[in-house]
Image 1 (cartoon, each protein chain N blue to C red):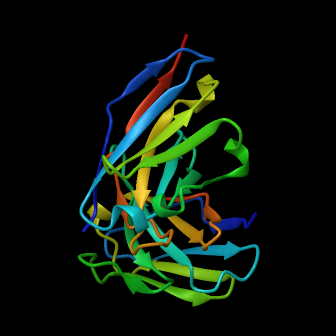
Image 2 (image 1 turned 180 degrees about the vertical axis):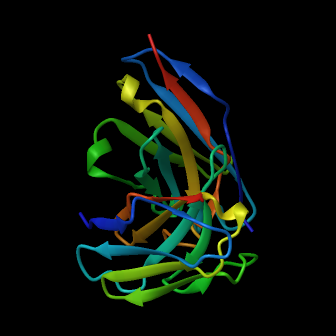
Image 3 (image 1 turned 30 degrees about the vertical axis):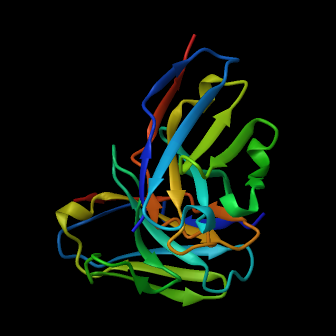
Length: 108
Length: 120
């Protein structure tokens, strides 16, 4: 199975701060890498698909980058409504699907 | 646009089974992927398995193999997940998720979640 190592597991930041989360795959996964936001009592929300593509309706302060096995998710200016847990997610056609361990983002 | 609506909360005894449904509207039901993902309190997201109805055969994550069955009924446009031999550690919110595009496993659409509580 492909392992996804996400870091940090939690972080605390202030409004307007730049937040960066990384995800390392145990092997090359091409561009099959998404980022989700999970809030209590809500369904996961797809923010970024295929490494760097912003899902429709998602604010442009969210972005993704990377290739091969190392990927980065960034919130350029943290807003109060961004408090949530974020997950990277890899998938392929077999299917093999794995989520990272999650990063809990809190407000200082 | 795919819209997924799941069945309601369940309370089950250890050792019993639960079957959760996910009704889809919009999109091409037979060509879309339907995954089941659970969120255990205090833990992360776990992919359990999924199915593309036109292929009829489900695929399962190794940790759930033998204990879960995923099916799809094209007549009612509904996907199902049955988990057997329930234990307290299976208490979680169970989500169905559909692919962004037909035939792929990108999980662009999600049901509202179904809380399954396992307690004696």
